[in-house]
Each structure stands twice: as C-alpha cells, then as structure tokens.
Length: 288
Image (tube, rainbow, N blue to C red; front, top):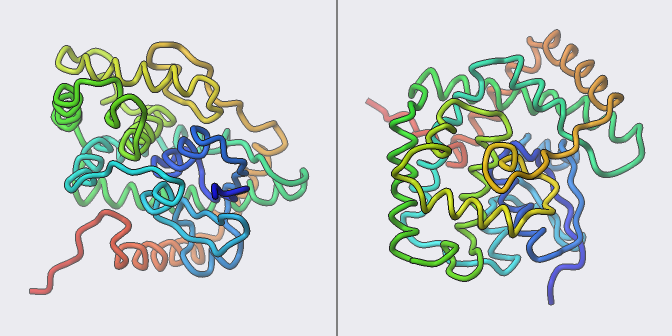
C-alpha cells in the first residue's frame, strides 16, 4: 500500500532533498516540506537532510533508503561514486558568501501558519551556517573543482546514457539514479557555480543535455525546479519566499552570526558526528 502522507525536512538546495522531492512528485504522494527539523530530529542528527516521516512513523534519513521505500530501484554498484563525481563543483557555491546566504533566504516555507513559518525561517539560518562552514572546510582541504573535473565526471554519465540507449537511465521512465542525478543538477543550478557552463555547452555531452530536457519535460510542473532557467526547455524558477519570511531569515542570520561562540562549536560538533557516520563524504583521518 503506498504512503498516504509524508513529512519532509530539508531545503531544496540539497541534491539529496531534491531527489526525494522529485520521487514524491513523480509518485504523486501527498507531502509537505519544512526547512528546519523538529526538535527531536535536531537533537539526534542536527541539520542532516533529508529526513522523512512516512504516515506519522519515525523520522529517518538517507535519500537512497527513502526512495527505495517509495518504490524506486535501479541503483548499481559504483553509482554512488559516479553521483559524487556529478556533484563536483559544489564547494564553489561558497565563492560568494552573499550569494550563498541570499539564495537560501529565498527558499519558501510551505507548512503552518505565518508565525510558525517565520520561526522556522529564522532557525534555518543555523542550517545555512552549517552548510556554509562545511563546504568551506571541504573546499580548503580538498580544493575546488575546475571545469575539467566536472567535464570528466559528466562524461561518465554520457557514456552510461549511450550504453543504455534510452530516454532515461532507467529506460523508458526514471529510476532511483535518474532522480539523484537530476537532484545533483538542481543543486548546481540553485546556487549557480561556474562549472555549470560545461553542461550547457560542452560538445562531448549531447546525451546528457537530451536527458536533462527529457527530465524537465517530465517534471515541468515540479515546484522546486531550478535548472529550467539554465537548460531547455525553459521553465520558471521556484516561487521565492514572501518578504516577511526573508526578513525573518535575515534577523535569524544576524543572531546566528552574533552567537558565533555558541553556533560555531555546535556546527563543529554536528559536523564531526555526521563525518564519523560516513554521511559527509569526507575521508576519515588515518592514524599514523
């Protein structure tokens, strides 16, 4: 029996949140989305996203597991590494701190009355601080990706599409990997990074662009579509948060920044916890 209703925590600038939201949209499963987790989830796993509750059940994360519970499949051994490659360039999102924070300020809350939405929007500022500092850490330790890195990563998907010879990686309809790869594209387009030009113009990626066009036609009424501004067929960007939510976000950001003696150690604590669980994508330190 399909789920009746799903609650989702996560911001649509995350590729993994995007993958889950794409799956829910494709299956037409009723759901709502909040951009700051319930207190019990925050105390357990911080701002790690996505986290979902299916039909009022316990909260759990991991986009692959969630999508499999929704009935998607098709992920093969080695796909996670290729998906990580498709996310090359993600650390470039913090090249402009202003752009990074401003784009997050435009994410709209979709559930609850105005006071509840404003509170979650203000609290979201800690989520933004968490991801900003984490991406900065990753970029400083492992370097930012250049256009050549992104080209090589997506050429692997070009070869996969040529091998399959169908419209989607799943054949005649998207599978789990289609959703996660398209989620990666939304990530790149939601806070634009320079390497995105590779996907738009590189002559070695015609099948990738055809696949993007097929996914955008299929999801043309998807409300979290960022790639429609950069790729054909053109589609409108997501509706921006109303003014009162943006004001709430920036007030929360001021408090988060002024509270650095508390918020930065809290970021470090949660970041170490997520890293030790293997969900950050960083290698563990080796003991000498």
